[in-house]
Image (cartoon, rainbow, N blue to C red):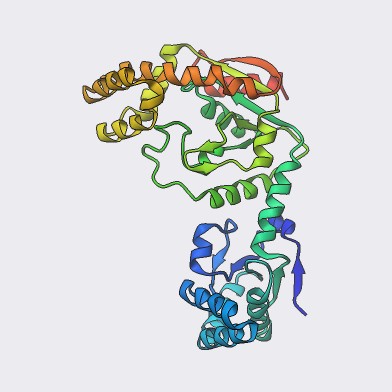
Length: 338
């Protein structure tokens, strides 16, 4: 009989291959980090089986599924044997049902050490949400755009602090310009899966630091269990001068092509107001980016002061960010707030 494992056990199984037998489209939309795809059905085959199930019932769907899968069985086993030569296999499908059970039967019959994830990928997602709700001491670093929050937190992580890098996971810096130079973002589903995996490696009884963000980071959405903790957690404010912030933003975005900056401007032009947006566009076209950044900061500072900061929990202190030595700032934070 094939062993079934709880999805919460996946956080501690780097010594096993996690084999995802869902279709390529399902895998692309979201998967467990580090898993490998070995689809039982192609996207088209899965759709055909599902359609037949609705029209003619389970038996007809099973027969069609066997017709699709039969010619692939030998290749599945050969491929799995290559993987199993390195470490044992854990099989996952959508709900821990027929697809994973069928693949596990084949691999076990072929003499391989195999287990199945109870409840499948759906249960993994549920376990991830539950994991986030178990964080006991979430701490936020907040501050106006350009204050160097991410850089400070990265230095804190180097010094041993637990840091959830939401912007890194989302591949986005969090503003209308946050995608510049970074390439494509993951899907929200994959972003959340990567988040679950990162938190699953942490000690939930110890402090965990995160940067204050909106609930959306580009197109990625922070899951509700974490978001609810973020808006109720204690926070520390990074304060830097306007000019230092301008210089930090220019360092991050100053090499971006003019057309990309103008396209990003369109995302906030309505909220900035038509006159300010038009002026900012002129500055960008003239490559007077410092002047453009000052206009953007007027908009972002109003957003921060008028909304985000008021939704948070207790203000625990001010981080003097008026120095470029982020490692020293990180040391002071961890010394004063262990």
